[in-house]
Image (cartoon, rainbow, N blue to C red; front, side, top):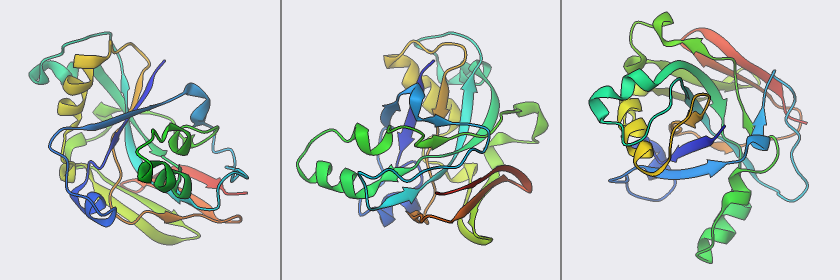
Length: 203
């Protein structure tokens, strides 16, 4: 099972990070050990002093494929969920400044909380989905899938050029603006529309 992720997939987030919107998907991977399920608490690791939250829609691959044409990409994912891509921002910034890979800032243990998945058929259109993150009852991030620079179908088609997508692979599809630090004692709640799919504490 692979975890693939797309960076800077919302123009407002790309802007807040000090960059331009990409012209092709920004791709990175995380190990399976990054996943944190069941609304278990997230423990801030001792190697970072600045962990940022990034709420994201996550899709699940339902059939194997490679070199998938965009017009058929919708046949290769069947469920959608919600995830948080925790980022050790201080480490990422330091590594980027040196021109070095920054996987350890994204893929460390338990850095990717993941909700249960819901069938796509549960929604009128996954290309017009509101999603949000609240911290301690305060809205911190809000996005809609229609604002993605690269749609779900475009992402799947692009990734399949480089990776053999397999049943059970999951794809984090990018975060909207509003990322920021989390602190011990915070409670994070994530929603698709009015459905609460994530509810966990930071320790």
